[in-house]
Image (cartoon, rainbow, N blue to C red; front, side, top):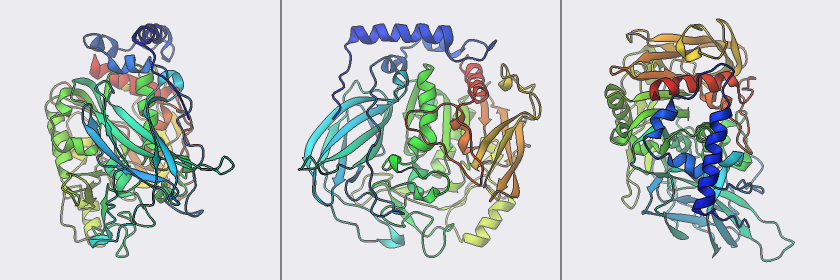
Length: 519
């Protein structure tokens, strides 16, 4: 097992100064591009993220041996687990539930994901060995709910010095005989804080859970009545299985247990922390009120952010109206109203379902209602918040094509009208611009191809908020694939189209927006 140790304060400070100097001299900017304007904004506060990333990372944090119950299976019964909460603050505790079948001793290593000199994570704590046992499979409840009631294996007290971030717990079996194989999987949780920050990174964990088919076929998409109705309840009290819902998009067994984070969100986190941005992290459930977001200057929706409780919508709407900048580096975001309720023992926000469509009175909403309803919930027009709408069809693949190269968001990219970033759009996107918003500008749009041949359309937009703030909608789940390629990352593909990975133009566009709104 890994035996990484935290460096002492002196060496950490020395590394921080070295990292800062390196960033100032060559932080990955395109030739002629402006220096990061966020640097001045951050100088007034301690940048805990930069200091954290100056600590020694570890190369040994990924899964190396994963075994599913069958070749096309969704779970790893040999070792699997889940956490009692989506997120936790320093000083609080979180229970971690683990099952091993057959029974086996195991260890639990906790890693914070970040940049860490390109290594991608830092070892925070090693727990165990524990005596594992097979925990009971839940009986299906009403609406096919699979809610585990496993005994806690351990209770983790979050140290006061753990920095906000996305944390992976690597579970590893310890075979009694040295010639027997070991097996691994992840558990995942977020450490949040309440400090003012330049950027609030919202993990899309509601959507992770909506698509989670653990143990076999129990996502919101797999109910016998249909895959688009309000028929299925899903619980956070169960492990995350392989991302089997995305066969043909991401089929990465080495992400088992991590939801969608490593596939669709880690490239953004890795890039932000690489460049020293002052970022704090939260789950979807932290956004049920606007309080956390109002302490931050910019809010980011990332990756596949499809499922929002109506309270999230009104929170982010309030944040925009109070001057918080919004970045939708996501596709198909704010598509379904997702009511959340307490679990079996009263812990809040542990069960959710697809309550109904966002979209107000748009035609595509009527279509969803007629084909898949009746729905008990109905959301407002998401386009008036995010700048574009979720029409139909909503999946496919294509190139991100510039239509407004004179916009400030393209400064330093060298891009001209018609220039394209290959494969960046997919597998879901935003396709109908909310042109009724005053000052809204379409900056990129073009065709996407459903099934490789059937045409659809996406639209990326920027519009001004009421207090000098801005809202950027990149209009694709794959945007963050153009920012970085963390260790072990697997590029997705969809509809016979794929992103290429890190692209200087995607990096510069993202940097330009942040420079402007954080200046």
